[in-house]
Length: 118
Length: 386
Image (cartoon, rainbow over all chains, first blue to last red; front, side):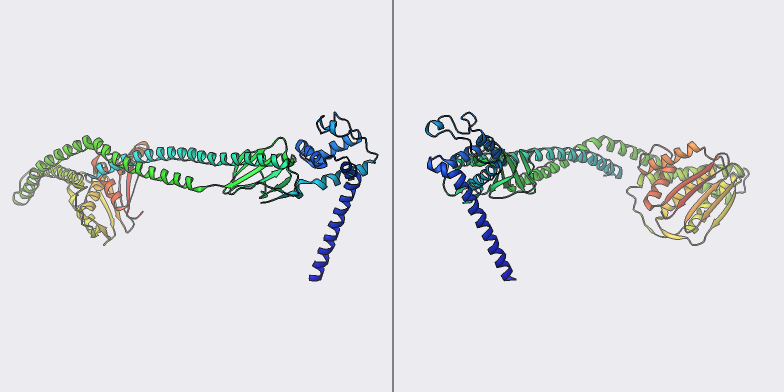
């Protein structure tokens, strides 16, 4: 019985680690690769989306629209932001990859993971 | 204090105190609820203030980009943040079945407040904040309300007693005057009636005079006066009279009283059919029993037709007296029964015979019924046990 519990625990831990690693890989590959290079504050953008849209579902919908057709007018960031950082170009990713990438991005910066009780 | 005075005072106090108590109870209840709401409102405002503090903390956290974000928590409050879809984000508790439509609500012993947020710091659209109700001020309020009711109760009881005595003072004076009058009158009756009856007996036994019919009429009239005297004395002394309740042979007493009414029966040429079970014995004061039997028999004879029949039945269960007389109309029977009920509540104002019967019946818990066919007969039934 104990062996079964330990086995299932290890499998679960392995799966979580695998998924987390995969998420991190997607974000690093599809998002952070450019954002880090250009020093664009990804988490700040996430927080601004959160401040305006509250739910990941709403953010994903807006992000999807923006990433397909990025414009200064439809950006969540203020106009002054583009004085310092370049305007994003439309991503050359299909809808599925884009959706997976957004999910991974939202999951990567998810505030639920950061919040702790004192 | 007379029995009727006590009863009047008791009735007045009952109505006065119960209505005053109800009024005060209602007022106290409204006051208690109003104050309780005030206390709850004060405690709710503490929730609101704490929700504002949490909002400020969330605003700061939204601009913080450290590895961990420490959720603002302060005892005795518990709070949680929810996104626009009312999905749980984080918190120091996770309440179930939140009433989203309410701004403030109470569940079991906790107060809840739903505080909306915009912009949505950390995605939070609502803060649900809660704390246990502080019962001390409410308990204090309840104690003070009960104390107020208690003090008001004592005050109004004393006031009621004072007012009651003030109100019944004229009634007491009237009753005393009436009693004095009856006492004086009846006292003046007694000696001449006794003299007449004694002298009639003497004339009957010692002299063989003519005019026996006339003598009998005088005897009947004197006995009627004598009974009236007895009835009046009974009513006058009824409340203060010391009863000697002991086993009484009612069969024997009934036979004696029938004998007493013999002159009256003979004068009306009535046929008396007796069915008296011997040795019917129960506990009753002798004077009460005499007044009850005398009044029933006297009415049965008085309202019988000449040469009519008079049935007297006594058993373990009841006393039945039936006459073949004038009878009573249906509406009049209702009147008598109503008067009897009124007599039970000592309203008075009608024949003293019925009043005496009702008082004895009430005192011993007997049951009185009257049944009559107009122009045929009337039957009075006294059941010994209810």
